[in-house]
Length: 203
Image 1 (spheres, rainbow, N blue to C red):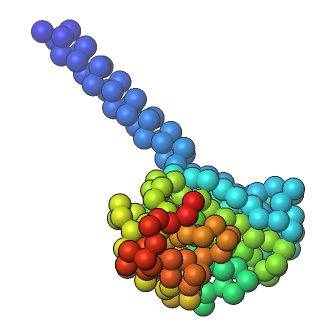
Image 2: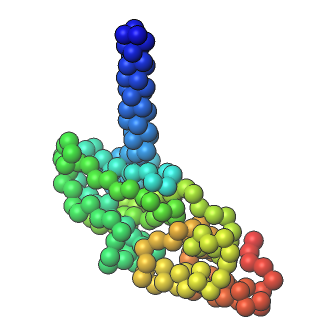
Image 3: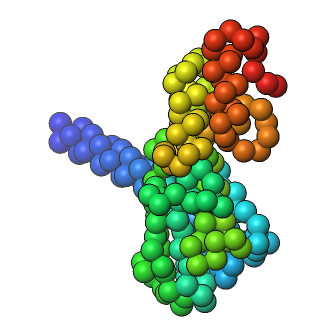
């Protein structure tokens, strides 16, 4: 009887350890690190370009400033990094060059799918990035992931293009005409489609 109890205790303890290890691994797997250097995010090859990072919904992005000599920030742009919002979704504040340890790290967890643009406030034209959060829908014009295209989607596109909101749940569906920008033309196309004036939306 004692042997059976001891065996069950060992098995139970083993399962608890396994669960703890799996939880620890998934926590690590749920993080993506973006290296920050001088005038670039991700890698030196992105100097003067746009760093693109793809993650899943619920994952955390960690910006590591330890390799930077100059001061930098990671700051959400909103709809357009050429005209960034005054109320960014996240903002690290200025991180001084040469910072190490926890002081060199900034993290943000993305709970909603979409495309999030960011930049360095110190180097706004040279240092930019995009976080693409998976889990989005694929219906052109369906920017709220509602499964259909309606006037609410048009309203959200207008708010986003005006900088009133920082992101869209399915932002990749918002550039209706494929122009490379999300603007009032996309909203107008959605409204025309929902009113029956257009038989379909591009492509």
